[in-house]
Length: 222
Ligand SMILES: Nc1nc2c(ncn2[C@@H]2O[C@H](COP(=O)(O)OP(=O)(O)OP(=O)(O)O)[C@@H](O)[C@H]2O)c(=O)[nH]1
Ligand SMILES: [Zn+2]
Image 1 (cartoon, helix red, strand yellow):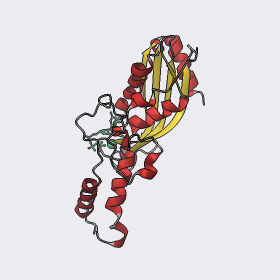
Image 2: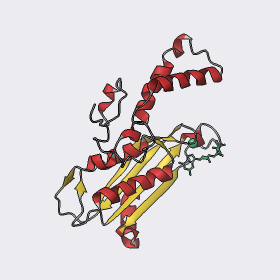
Image 3: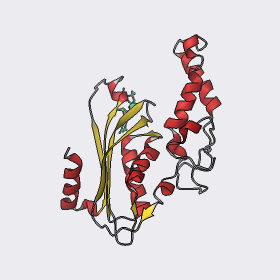
């Protein structure tokens, strides 16, 4: 398999994400990982967890669970093996030097502290520069997924998205706002369902108060 797109999980029977970076090394920021999702290892671990919580991993409803979880993890953590540079390499010659904003991009991520989901929406905007690049709108949503499909914390998710924009599009400014509910705060622990965490990261001209206020009013205006 030479390239994995978000839609390619019909082919999840193959675990080899080895060349998902398009042959480039570096840029994925996870050089210490092997490029493979080791499904048998996940299966063995899940079986252990089932035993450890007091379940019978051999009962009918659970026999295939380790396999299912391994398949699901390969999908949920696929972003570890995907390269943002590759996604943002589709660019257009458009003479647009004003704000481009895709808002309310829904996503699911996994809290790296508890390995339970956190989910919500991301708002991703940038101001192209004359010598910078304009990319396809869907690519901004793909960028969100690449970083969401990893063990994450919300703060890092937010800054990784904005940094990828800065690095690969060289915009005059960039803004990312992420609003999430963390299941680790809803279903366990402090148990506050509905509590929302909002994080933002701005770069370049979006630091300017008027520009930032304009972006924020577009983001928050429902
Ligand atoms: N900053 C940040 N914290 C997070 C995120 N996701 C989960 N957390 C927090 O990570 C913290 C882990 O705290 P610990 O005290 O080590 O773990 P814990 O005993 O399970 O904590 P409780 O959740 O309070 O029960 C908790 O406060 C979580 O709310 C995130 O994306 N960003
Ligand atoms: Zn958590």
